[in-house]
Image 1 (tube, rainbow, N blue to C red):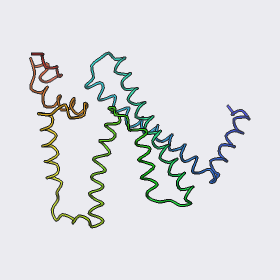
Image 2: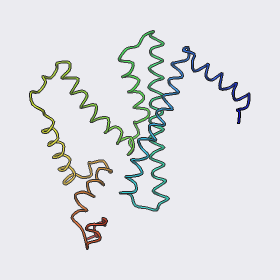
Image 3: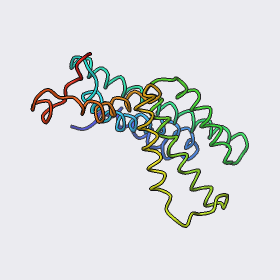
Image 4: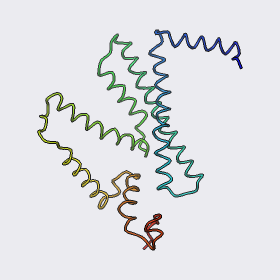
Length: 212
C-alpha cells in the first residue's frame, strides 16, 4: 500500500533537512538523545530483569513494575545527559569558533551534575561503573605520558587480590557500606550457602535463612 502524498512530501522535507550540513550540530544533539534512550533500554532492561527476579521479593506485577521503572530511569537519564553534553559542546564551539578539550570536560561536569546528581540506586550503579573504568584509564594515561614508570611485571594479579580482599572484608564486617545489589549478590553466594534443610534447598533451590 502506497504512502499518502502528504506523508511522502513530509519525508522528503525531513530527508533534505537531515542532509543539510548547516543543521548538523542541532540534529546531532537530537540523535544523541535518541541513542541515549535506546542504549539505556538495551543496558538496563536485561540487568533489571535478572536482578529483580533473582533477588527481589513481591508479586509478578510488582517485579515487572520495578523492571520498567529501572529501565525508564536509566534510559531517560542517559538520553538527557547525552542531549545536555552534546548541546553544551556545540554551544561552546559555536561561541569560540573552535573546539577545545575543556569543552568536553565542562559539558560533562554540568550534564553529570544535573542528570546523575540524584543519589539513587540507578545513578549509584552507573557512577560506580564509570569510576572503576576512569581509574583504570587514568592509570594507563599516566603510564602513556610518562608520569608513572611502566612496571616490568604484571600488577594485575596483585590488584585483583587486593580488590577481592577488600570487598569480602567490607561485606563480612561493614556490609552496610556496600551498594544494595552487591550486598544481595554476596549474601546469596556467601551467606545463603551456609543454610539448608534438606536435599531440595541444598541442590535445587535456595531458601532464605530462618529467623533466629
